[in-house]
Length: 385
Image (cartoon, rainbow, N blue to C red):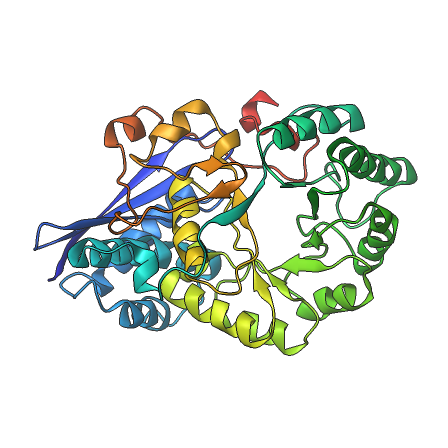
């Protein structure tokens, strides 16, 4: 079997343009992938077409070699852009393999380790940045069966905050904890916002409300700073979604300070993502992959998580996107009682793209998430803010 073509599709989701791929073969089997990257939809699309020459005419089963060639042969570090383009092609190859063998991808990754996957809700808190709004929406999430939910209470904060904004963020955390009760996990999203000192001040102040983790409290580039926060914070630190190669995870794990690793398969490709999961397992850590892209990324993460013995919890945006987004895939991820299940009888990802629906939602340059602008929590197009 040989790869004969690579196609791309951009879908204009209001808070982040989604980018999908379709890889064709001479056997008549195609596979689908995703390569969404906030703010870089057309850039990643161009990267896919610049890199596809490294896989055309080659066997889609050779994913290890494709991952190596798509990263090494260019001899440039394209970061998340290169990683996303690589993943968009490589994801589709895994789908092709599953279809050709009549197996779900999770079986190709090692088989089922879990009967179902516990999920946490994200993207649920659109609305005013007030304790009352967050509390009301948190109760709605728990009423839907979720036993864990994540949120960023920090507004447009960057590095430091004034006293009133600090107090508001802690008040929001307190309100959510009171709304959901002691049994529900609350996960605090930091979005790489703070200096080391600010992050530690927040960690101390939120600790009485028993968050399960404090995610990405400082920017990811200086691993030493993330390690310092993790060692001194009374709340466990989670991070990893920004890294795009296994070596970055190796450096982070070598410090033995962060044990909740949020790898992003869409910047690594599934081949490297599986290797990183093994590295985390050898470090006695757990994985909670970043799954805040489009609906196919969520499905890919579900397959990876199903085959990962040290999987912790699965991130879900799908239930809180626009209604039409549920029609992008023919068989999207579905959450029942706060959990995801993958059927035995599926092949590949178990879904295809709905090409008619893709065409109904064109690219919009204003579709990105402006995390450092007031009101970003509403997840509206930038032009509407």
